[in-house]
Length: 486
View 1 (cartoon, one colour):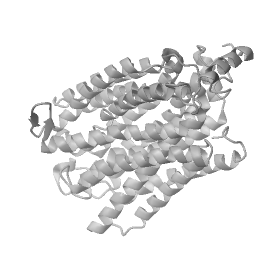
View 2 (cartoon, helix red, strand yellow; view 1 turned 90 degrees about the vertical axis):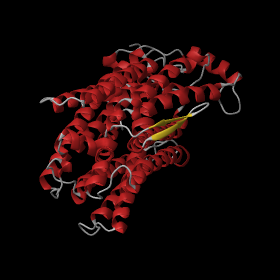
View 3 (cartoon, helix red, strand yellow; view 1 turned 180 degrees about the vertical axis):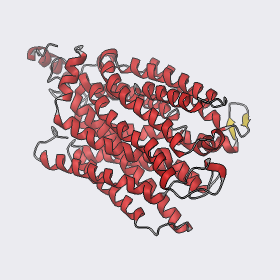
View 4 (cartoon, helix red, strand yellow; view 1 turned 30 degrees about the vertical axis):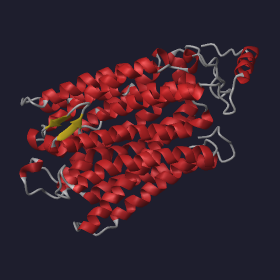
C-alpha cells in the first residue's frame, strides 16, 4: 500500500471544488444527491431488520409448538449472534475491497433465502430440528453482517466528520423502522390485516406465526432492487469532488485500493478501537438481552400475548424511543461536544445503569399493574440508552476511526464485539432462566422455568457499569484533543 500523497494534486481538487460550493460548504446539488443515496441505503438496512427482528415477537409460539425451552430458544439467538460477530470481522475487510453497495446486495439476497428456509423448516418435525434451525439462523447472521459495514462504508465517503454524529443518529433511527415493521407485522398476523390498494382493500385473515419468515423477505427483495438503481458508492461516482481533509487520507489516497492485511494492521493497532469495541461488547449484551427476551418476559411474567396492550407498548415503545435516542445523541455529539462520541456514550451508559438499578429495587415478585408498567417503562428506557450507544459508537466512532478507506474494517471490528456480548444474552441467559427461574405451571413453556426479572436485570448491571467506566476514561483522556479523540 502506497502512502504517498501529492499535495499539489489535492490542492487543485480542493480549489476547483471550492469554486462551485454553495454557502453550506458543499457543491450545488450535493445535499440532494446525498439525501437520495442515504434514503435508499437507510431503507435497505431497515429492511434487513425486518428479517432480523422477526423471531422475538413469535418466540412464545415457536417455543410452544416446537417444544423448545428457554435454553434451546436462546441457542438459536446465540448462533445468529456468533456468526454475525465473525461475519462483521471478515465482511468488514471484504467491504473495503468490493464496495459498500455490492456488500449490502449480497447480504440482502442471503438473508432473503435463509429466512424463507428457516420458516419452511419449522413445518417439519424431525430429531435434528433444533441444530438445523440454529445452523440456518447462524448462516443468516453471517449474511446480515454484510449490511452494517456496507452501509457505513458508503456513507463515510459522503459525510464529513463534523456531520457523522447526526448521520449516526439518523442511521440508528432508520434501523428502528425495521423493528417497528417487524413488531407491527407480528401483531397483524395474529389479528389479520387490511391492506389498502389502488381500487380496493385486500383483507388478509390471521396467519400462522411462520409467515414472519415469509413476508419480510419480499419487502427486502423489492427495496434492494431500488437501492441498486439509486445508490452510488461515493460522491465521485455521482460526479462530485469533495475534500474530507487529512482525516480520511492520512494513510494515502482516499480512493486507493488497499490490501486487507494493511487495513487490519492499521485499524487493529489503534488502542481507541479496542476500548470502543469493549464498550460495544457491553452494549451488545444488554441490547440483545432485551430484544431476545422481551416477548418471553411478556408471556411468562405478565401472562400477556400479542393481542395485549403490553405487546403494543413493547413493539411501539422499544423502537420509537430508540429512534429518538439515536437521533438526539448524534446531534448532541456533533453540536455540544464538537464531534466527540465518548462524553455522550458515558452519559448514556450511566443512565442505563441507573434504570437497571431502579428495576432491581422494585418489590420482588410484585405483579401489580403499577409495578408491571414501571418495569416495562424501565425496559424501554434501557433499550433507548443502549440503542443510542449502538448508533453513536458502532457508526459515528467507526467512521471517524476508519475514514472512507477503512470504515468497513473499523465498523466490522467494533460491531463484532457487540455480538460477542450478544452471544451471552442468548443461550447463557436461557440456561440461567431454566435453572433458577420460577417454574411454570402450564405446558406453554415446555416444562421450562419462567424468565426471572431480578436475574434478568442483575445480568445487565455489570455491563452498564463497565461501559460507563470505559467511556468516562476516554472522555477524560481526550478532553483536550478536539475532535481527534473518541
